[in-house]
Amino acid sequence: MLKIQFFSLIRILLKRDAIDIPWVEGDTVQSVLNKTQAQISTPFLHKLLDEKGASHTGTIILVNRKNILHLQGLQTPLSDGDVLAFFPPGAGG
Amino acid sequence: MIETDRYARQILHWGAEKQRTIEESSLLIAGVGGLGATVSQLLVRAGIGRLYLVDDGCLDWPDLNRQTLYGEKDVGRAKLPLAKERLNQINSSTEIVELPGRIDDSFLLPDGVHGVADCLDNYPSRFSLYRATQPGSYFVHGGLNGNHGQVLTLLAGKSQPFDEIFAGAVQPEGTIPVTPDNVVIIAGLMVNELFSVLWKTPKLLDRCLVVSLDEFNMAFLDI
Image 1 (spheres, helix red, strand yellow):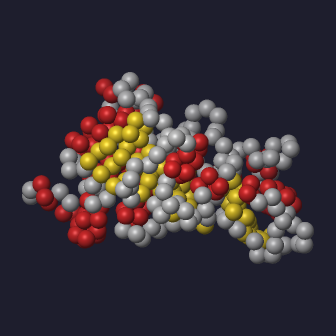
Image 2: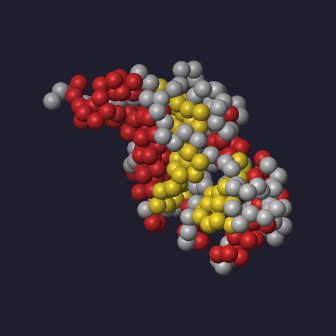
Image 3: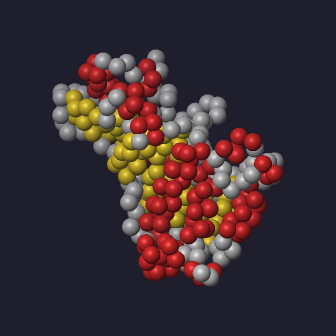
């Protein structure tokens, strides 16, 4: 099982803190994003990713506490038990 | 009551030893805008020994909704000397050191700083500030947008680097919405954590506290 956590504006948009998604061999961040949207029936990927699949909102995506930009991006492979977090941090001060 | 009773109410809460630690400590406050004005003010009220303040801005009308050290007559003036003047009026026992300028990769942290408060408003300067933080020093980050914000503590040299965690966190185009209440709440949480850092018991080390005032929600994001 994979745990997908939502923070801040994404949590409010999706009206939930987290969901569990069954893990399947070959899962990547991208495939789990697609499965997440299908499971919760709330379109949100367009808010995170542009047409080429790149993040454009400043939302950071962590897999087991590591930013995917320092892993393999959306193609980062996932293992059973992994935790994904979606967090759009506030930039102001 | 006399002047030496100034800290009587907080010593009732945290005791004389922790008060002494605060009075013997130095912190660097990066930015004396929304977050930094309140963070520095509360630290000075609590009796912090020395504050290094870094800023390069002048006060503008839209700052007045949340930058608690300043007033209408200050518009157009540089914030750094204003902040020093106001903080000295609040508590003359704190040494205030001005470090004028913008934080970039040439920025060097003064020696003897026990912790850094990231009260900046943009990621490039935050990344430079973190890179300037010596290994073994605590870095307390605060940031916000509208009714949302976060506080996170890192131990330089041991935690994941700030610029790796926040890689891809792009600066939004245009002006960021900021409310007075949210700024003061995030600043208050930062100060609470800065005290804990000075006492070597940080509560948010490698753990981001994510605050959403829309629903009074607070959640932890482990880093």
